Image 1 (spheres, rainbow, N blue to C red):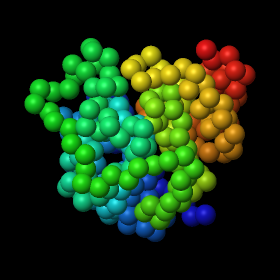
Image 2 (cartoon, one colour):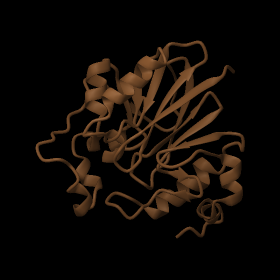
Image 3 (spheres, rainbow, N blue to C red):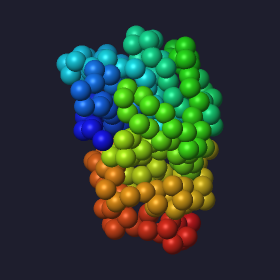
Image 4 (cartoon, helix red, strand yellow):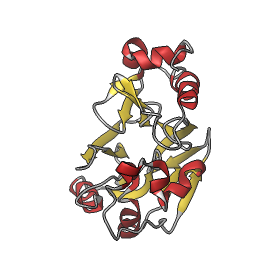
Length: 228
């Protein structure tokens, strides 16, 4: 397996990690979770890719919360690329307020209308595909949102979205969240993964599955069936 290049553009709002992944020797890139800039983030993402002599070929949305997909439509439009999202969160692309508290929904700037990109590919549990020369396996992991999805890339990294963070997990108290689903996802989808996988989360610093298995009290509680 070749080396995997990983870059990140951290969004201004909520410090969401927008990951840029590419395979060694490739000029193609996968974009993950284009969030909120000023107000959009797509120009910064495209420029970062250009600086690295990469061109985006697809974008993967780990879940439908606004801080992970705010810049999706303009990015897909300017780069002419498809969006990948789990079918259970697809409706949030056009109606993100469904998964927000009333106070959180107020952050949406007046006059902003959310539209789907021209091409949307729906993900399902266990789906595998090659994107930008990267071998990807998707795992449905609901709890934070109904369609939250993990992706293992080239057996080297885990794109964990807001399911797993370094030392923590995603919240389940927002509309459409579920603590019982989160516990099941952590126990059945995260816990079996190999220790060496580098975790690229939706927010915060990177980690490894081994480090989280040993030191993440929320993951340990889920593994023991006592998260709730």
